[in-house]
Amino acid sequence: VASGSPGKGSLKNAWLIPYSGSNYKYFSPISYYFMDNGYIHHQAYHTLLSSYKICEKTCPRVHFGIMECANKKGGKMKFHNTHQNGLSVDFMSPLIDGQGKPVRRYARRGLRHYFLEFNSEGVLNINPEVRIDFETMAKHILSLQEAGKKHGLRIKKVILKINLKDNLFATPSGKILKKQNIYFAQALPKRIDDMHDDHYHIDFQITNTDG
Ligand SMILES: [Zn+2]
Image (cartoon, rainbow, N blue to C red; front, side, top):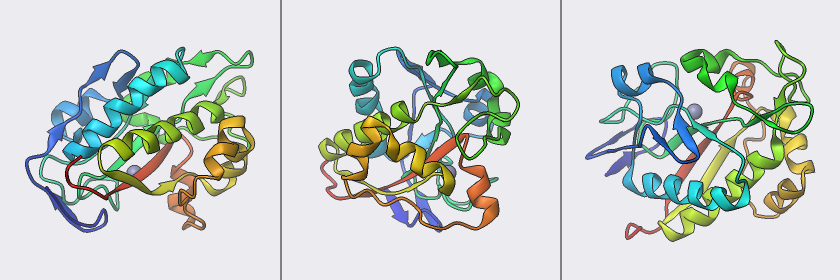
């Protein structure tokens, strides 16, 4: 049961996201096992797992990273202003190299992943050979929207660094995404904006409790 809002809320009888599946993995054992931050509302649980099934077909070479979800009982979380009611999830930005091949080595940084920085074109500061795979990011967001429809959720808000949104919407799937009327944060305080490059944050909203 999700109560309140992402910014002030709680969660009862939360579900724990699987640590890994065929094409996804939670990003940090410390976050998952010691901080108990892999919890989520059951409709978001079903939505995430269904979305990764869709991605097995739409982006078969890609391995996805799930970052922080919520505490077992929701409420305040270290390092996050929101994530309080089990309907917010951070997703790791998929990365590719110069040849367009998926890059997975930075997914093993655990909590330090949050500190990776990218330039305004999505190129990784510490390794300019590596950049954000915006086409895959768009496909993943579309898969979440599709899966959410089956499980009674809609995407309420996406937070991605403001100057990366153009790159996302310029890709083939990004153009489809742009037509979907999904709300992307339009302006953010610098501190918040700077954080949302290595990952994108999504708030879901329950539209039907039968999901
Ligand atoms: Zn977040």
